[in-house]
Length: 397
Image (cartoon, rainbow, N blue to C red):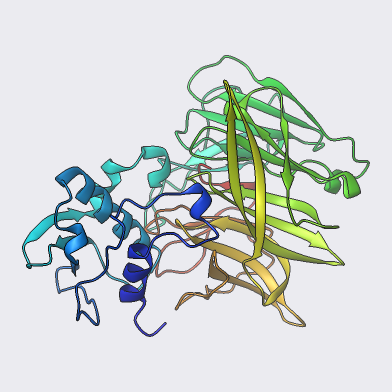
């Protein structure tokens, strides 16, 4: 909180925490630290951050240095107040190792995890999947159009949907909440009905909105009371694999959002009359051509809220959450995946928010469904109504 930029850099250099270490790697050489006696890191007036490193990093090659700078830059993106657009890594003697700006960093990581979608999506009043463009100003391209392929035709009515991160496929839940369909957004090959089927009597207890990770796997929850389960469809296949969630106890999963990197999953969990936001680590074991997946070590990500209505990833380690504190009114705020609240975490009030979505690119607007319909919030602006009728707004993922 006192010096978030310097602390974020120190955290990256020290390597992944014990919680996330089993599923991620650091590209920094072991023992890499800030060169002593560096106290604080401050970007200059051109948004460049110079990071002096100790001798452990002196001999890294250019390719590894670029990956190191990318890891720092993507971490600093989650700090909305960091003002860092470029990172320069320095050897212990002060000479330059490498320099990297945001545009080049995006080319280093896979496009599906970089978070620069072409469209925003929602289900219109004809129960079709539609899309719209619109950048940071929130104004251009507000007119929605049906997506290509069968999801945009409306023959199969939808209650919720998800679009793959490459924007080439979509998944949709039927109007009654019982069935899950997968189809192409680039051709008219028809919709494929998966084997996922909820048998819950109540529509509200059936399938949640689906979610795609950057690996191409599709996730969804069947909210069937005591029989609730988290499911994964590898590469969007017809057959689903149940994912064991360690530490869930008597709780049931109400909503699921998988991170772009596929190593963390955000869950809304109902237990003892309240709903909470939990973050779990996704562990994979490969067996031949298939992989087994489990979610472990659940952590509470919004501890002060006792009724979570909706949530979405809004960066590498940041989420946007809709919920209430005990005895309070509905709030919209950003939270970090470790449960902390970033500075400037509160968002303008909006009445009756039922669903919300965000892009990993914080230059793109938030999109929500509220009492006013489908609305958007451009950075630094106010909520703007797109259409009066619609549901299930989503960015790819």
